[in-house]
Amino acid sequence: SAVTSGLTYLVEKFKDFSGSATINLDGVVRSRLADFAEHHL
Image 1 (cartoon, rainbow, N blue to C red):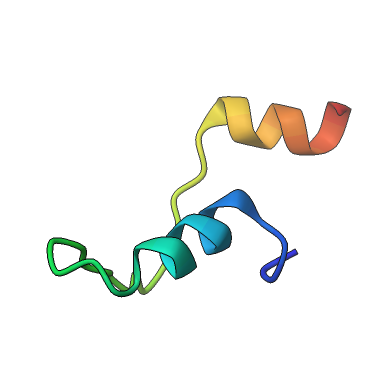
Image 2 (cartoon, rainbow, N blue to C red; image 1 turned 90 degrees about the vertical axis):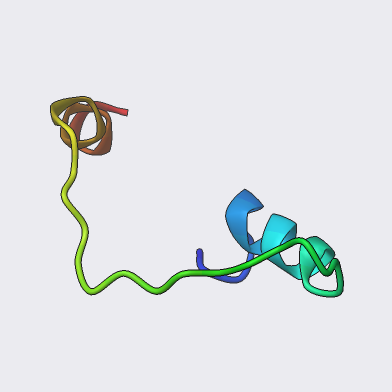
């Protein structure tokens, strides 16, 4: 989920680090591997 993902954890831990930054993406292009994993795992 958005709350428990490793990426969310990492962003929260680096929030106060002056060398960190975040970006917001308007959309996502999924790879064939990600699509396969979503349907088969």
